[in-house]
Image (cartoon, rainbow, N blue to C red; front, side, top):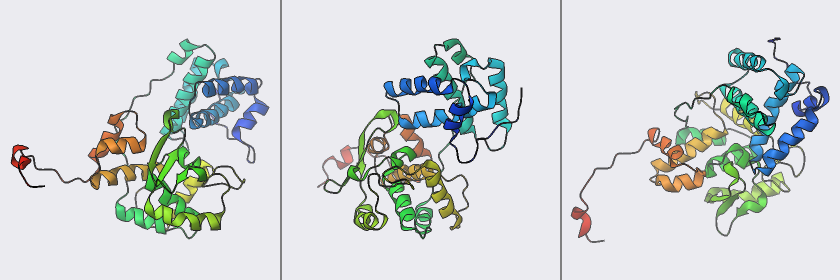
Length: 304
């Protein structure tokens, strides 16, 4: 097996390159895409799996389900030891392959893929002072507003990208999050400071449909562009933490709410967590003063 991992041609998306170079990929991918859409999975799921599977198909020059298990295991092994590929990329590739095999009725192949163990790692968070430093670091208005907005509502990357201007409700001071993780809608709080700055942002940056648009009008900004914004902002601060991402701001949002005395169930709803256990992890990183236990009888007759 060739262990040198190929990279896509500049100027061409890896998905389009796979459609051009790999026989049958365009038709097979269409079936894969239809299945994900019909199952009402989130757009981010399709986006993440597509890139990894296209990369895999280009490397072997054939469709994923035509690659032997031994070849796939060797490929996955080299992902884990090669520089430039994160553990997240490895996991998404494995999950993507499992999904692909099931679409093509190859359950036996799906079961032969590596088991992904869930790691119990604590989320990285920024302190409130670090958040302040990060938000004032960019000189670009759009960049400053994006960072503050992401933190203010605790949104996921895909939710930030797909927030539309019409989703902002100034009367009710809410933001509508459409088709979040699990394809579920929810409402989150619109920060007063964001509401006050919104009109100025809209007048100067002039987005048409999405709150944060890329170079193409009426289209959401790309993930890489957003991560670039936070990377550049980090370089202008004295923050020494590494690997800070938009999800770090989401972790910081939840942690700071806990430290401000907001109950964990309210935070669960704001974050859109289906399982409360995903929210409880923030109790391990939040600096919350312990409460002194007392009998309710002692406060029963206290004057309100």
